[in-house]
Image (cartoon, rainbow, N blue to C red; front, side, top):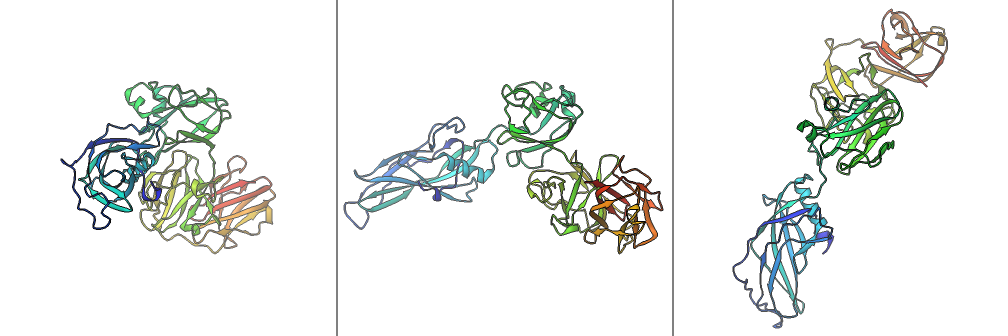
Length: 473
């Protein structure tokens, strides 16, 4: 059987119905070579239900043929597979006993219907190919219908974290759900959660939705690791006799689980995030940071086009599109919603205009806030001014025309600094805080000086809101 002729099919194959001829089908005698079979006929019969998940064989029988042909003939079968509605035909080959590749069946049914392991309907048109002395006779019988259940592991509709950091009871679990996209879990089996540990050596397990719904989180199906206390940052998950994993060091982490292959990864969550999209022409260059707020959210204010505006990167993932943060639906322009870290798509403002995009990167939620003033002041230049330059001007670079500015690797000396527009003190921003205590804030017109210790910094500033961020190198 050539792999080129087959697409795939999958898993538990159940022959629901079989349309058979009542008698052998008679074919006309071929006009060439009188030794070729003059009378050939066949019927096909159903097979027993096949559980491909439990069957380790490479090939499966999808029909039982009974063939009448002259001695010395060879017989193969062409099987045209279509969806339940008769569309998307795929041709595969079966051997003389009606066997086909199990992998091919899996591939076909999942390409038609997805990976969810529920019965799916396939239509089969079977044709016998009888060859003798170089001559081939071909004849089809009435279609048969198969119910096919593709192979896939169990994936719950939702998962919850329990452990030392959030509690080990049901009440703690329901407060800590893993985030998932809107897709079918068998098309997108990736779930994620951000959590904070305040001590070392914190243990964890994962609870499926079914246990929460039943009111007993410790029913069968709890997900964990094979070895109790495994502190690996990535590894395999099990849901039978699962043990607790361990976070060795306090901090904020994102746990991502892929329930199609039952694996997990745990990574430290960055505190700094960057924008890529319409403000910087979708590159990893000249990107500007989201500016933090004291409530834990981060924001970016600019003019948004309302069409595929942006994705976000954590500070450790800049330039890696596989680790971008975005929406589950490409071009989502909802006023608020959830974000995903797997297969992230571009999202956008509800319409074109000046908005503040506010994001909670721990909860992976966002909100668009339209500015009352749709004609904010523009400036030719924003500068840092202070002890570092004798209160002169150290110019920042604007990100496109987005009202957001940055400067990298600036050496700051002295103890005071402010932001200044157009090399003039007529418009300036100060905040009266110490960067050593809080690296971000909101500057106001003629506000007091910002206190800063000597060092090398990356600095980000928005001239619409006066918000800023200093990152010490």
